[in-house]
Length: 254
Image (cartoon, one colour):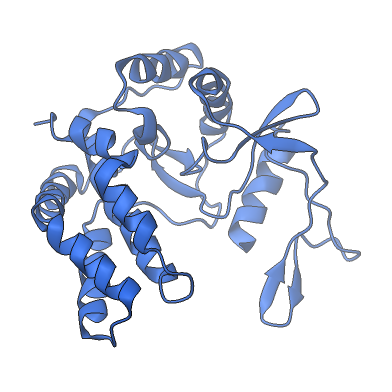
């Protein structure tokens, strides 16, 4: 969290006023310790979390302003093209098999068994694209990772909040979620060009992020499952979830 707050402060200092405004402590710090946690305080924005096709144009424009401010040394991680998300999921799946079974556990395991072929396919494709993309850190920028999900409208303005997962990464980390749509890819590339960002979306990187995020969300579901059972959500994810169109698109990329 401290890294994300430092990124927000850096952006604000450089004229980006749509990422939130931090209220500093009396001693001028960006955060305070609270027991074992870190606490940050922001100026309240009376807004609504909104994501539609229509919000993509301002979202991409705002992201480009942030990309243009990318610099080294912000203390945030750098993305790697790995298949760790799939490995984590398989470890969680195996642990669930070996754990005491509740009805919800059995439902989740039955769903995984039913979609085992799809899971194996996505794991193989993730490994393939991770290998192809690995070793190339050109075109890495300051990314949010979920800009659409953190797009807020309030006080007559647009915002992109939540920079806890800020990372140096290719812009496909921000673009993949709509990358299955041609109009969105074209709009993203056009916005990069209009803002003088010397980059164009790469199909292989889009595919990598589609498969990577497929497993990332499965891992998140399983991490939460022991506390708040996720059987229905997992079933919906496989049967008719929004991720399906992203995987279908990634499957078209050689």
